[in-house]
Image (cartoon, rainbow, N blue to C red; front, side, top):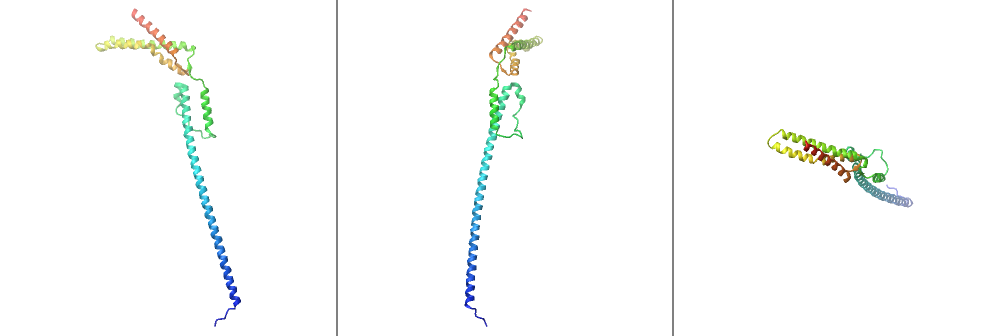
Length: 223
């Protein structure tokens, strides 16, 4: 037979159940709030990470553009240096690569190199002290052309047929080009002196070669 429960005990149990239910509801609400906060924090962290990735990608792209600009400027300055050196600049080869221990902004360094190249002396005219060498170039070129012409004439004289007719003509053409042959060594001389071959040395070489050629032809005609 069931024992009846006192009304005070039943009421206490109901109050206890209600209290436990309220506490569970409060804990559930607290857990839901904590979860919502964690979701918001995670979303914020993901957004911040995405922004950092975007900034990093932008910095990488900017760095790549800077590298391309620096490489292009370095190649341009290297080409100017080779042009200033002249014929010897061909031995410089391609522009050197970046140094491993290089630090800092390369733009000021390139600006300094550009200013240094601008301050260097522009190629000028050969000085008067080079005139004897220019005269030697004119005489040497005329002598070489005359020797080739003489060889062609001798070859034609010892041959027959069309060769005997054509070789003297070729010899005359080569001999008449003698005043211009000396311009080739004169150009090399100007490159070694980091100068340009202006009209004055060109006329000097050509005039010397012309005089030498005329003298040689005169001596040949008087024999």
